Amino acid sequence: MILCATTFVSNPIKFQYLANANCLSTLSECFAEETSAMKMNSKNGVNMKTLIGASMAVAALMSGGQALASDCEKVVIGEMNWASGEFLARLDGFILSEGYGCDVEYLTAGTVPQITSMNEKGTPDFASELWANSSVELLAQAEQDGRLTKLNPKPFEGAGETWFVNGNFAEKYPELKTLEDILARPDLFPHPEDPSKGALHTCPPGWACELSTNNLYRAFDMEAKGWELVMTGSGAGLDGSIAKASERGENWFGYYWAPTTMVGKYDMQPIEWGVPFNEDNWHDCIVKPEAECANPEPSSYTESEVVSLAQNDFIAANPEEAAYIENRVLDLPLIGRYLSYMDDNQASGEDAAIEFLLNEEPIWTQWVTPEAAERIKDAL
Image (cartoon, rainbow, N blue to C red; front, side, top):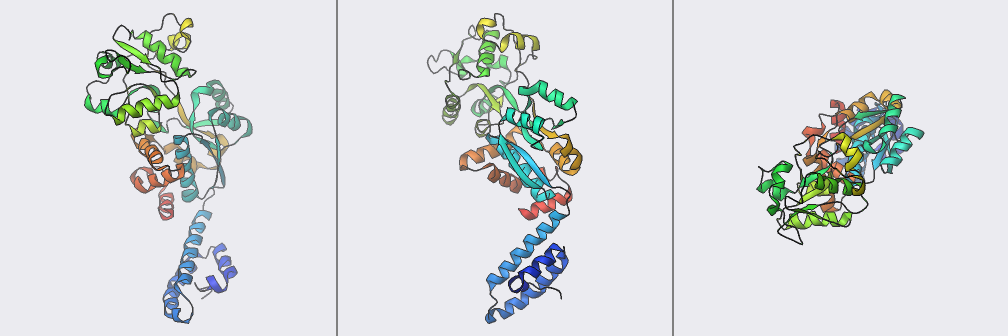
């Protein structure tokens, strides 16, 4: 026998040499044989702490040996500085590290810095969640030049900004789904200052969505239909209006975006606009100040493009890992549960990612290879 589990204590260098030589079957077999012997010799000074230490070392080294079989090396993941971006990046990191043997690092920043760094510096290797609307021309040029690719065009089904109703309303009035349905019932959303009017919650001053929401309010002639805008004042004020209404069992209607903690926590549902997107009027009027938008026309909200963006070099060098990113899709209720978990438990994105992997095995095992799935399960 070359090495036995007791060598973990007596000769750790030799133990490490054997592990580095990938003699994993010998380690496993040897450990099994020595376990009973160590128990029998416990009275002679080989105690259970030694046995546990050896067990942990063998398990760790065997896990490391599995990782050595992968060609994946260092991978830098672009992590966005908000909850869903942190969750998805950490989920990707755990899967690539434990399932594919990658050496994972994170670059945390907002959308524009991530895109700029990817385009100009070639790092990160991919961004898990990137809102592409802010850099349409830059991304188009980078794709044309062969530097970047929208590897996953929809990591979240239903992601974007629009008008929402809260879960209380959706549950009580499932038949009222379209904007036309809702506008006919201002009495269901009493304004806090004038209950005879319906309340549409708009964005804080300075946000781009304040202009679009206020102009759509005019485009659908909502004042004449018995509605008034609610000025929320700040992001916290907007969130507070949702939380207050939802926790009191009241209805709420207004602008928001997903995936977010609020959408997940209060089961908020996007409305059906019932009209197509009016591209010309949107760009020429809806997104501009009221003084520059004399004739707003009905339109659905512009579609947000949320993608997983990757370096072409990363895709070419790591086809299996790239296939995982391409396959990885979450719907809004699913990710909402784990954003709520983060909020309720003051948990990190990594905590939520592990919680997801523990609870959603039938989902994530469809994204990865069978071999990667087994390694991830072992790591968990």
